Length: 365
Image 1 (cartoon, rainbow, N blue to C red):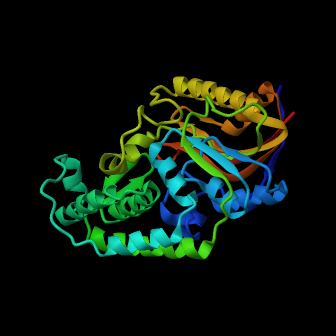
Image 2: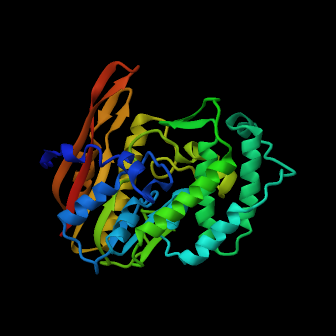
Image 3: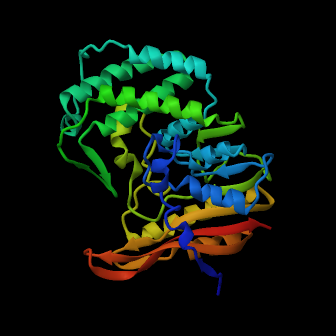
């Protein structure tokens, strides 16, 4: 039987969540509940004594926490994700800007004279999601941003608008669903102007290095990287759950981006039956681990943050199964750091079993 030690690691309790990033400049430009914190990446940068000539990979880069933290430490990094939305956020956070040109474009944007758009989206969802004035603001500023010739600056302003639009709506994300709560909200135009000013201020103060940082739309099951090219991996795959990310981020995709080519949930789509979900999930994880084995150098170190699966009939300790799969592929499992424990319940009160959120640490043999 496969055996591996687990180590209680309460110091990681909050670090495996995105919550600490809410106070971190640049990291907090876009709230992403599914992410982890800058502090978790810093933990492994220090633990492994990373050097500036080594490369870090995040094959599920999300909104770029690993990539930005590496950039802040002058360490090259490469990330891919299947979500065009999160890749855009990652790129905006880690781009090397001409600050003088960016400041001028922002100054121009703050002087844009508002005019009511001739047409608005007809989807009833938007009429329920926000006031008419907010929707008018969004469509006006979206058009103005799209006319900017410099793609880097265009994306910078687009992210500011996207975040401001959601904050000015009646929507809130709650687990796997979007809820609507009508209450007074500031005008989106006002939120947008405040956001771009703050983003520019934080960027100028950060004085980020120009180290090579790449974020691309890609598939962790088919990494477009050379063999033996990666020194470290810091990542977190989608958890074993029923969250369909393309649905949760419908607002952003519908208004600002081309929708993803397929549903984003776990790895490949929405799985209905718990048994089918679990089997498919671990099949996909196995494919990812084979890719990581191929691209990692001998001696490379990896940390994979993962949570347990909760179903009405069972609880799944994903960290142990992930570790066993990684061992089969050829990695040496050094530890499972248990950051958080919780109960899997049905009908809210009936306990099914215990699950946990952990960081599986390994090295390439």
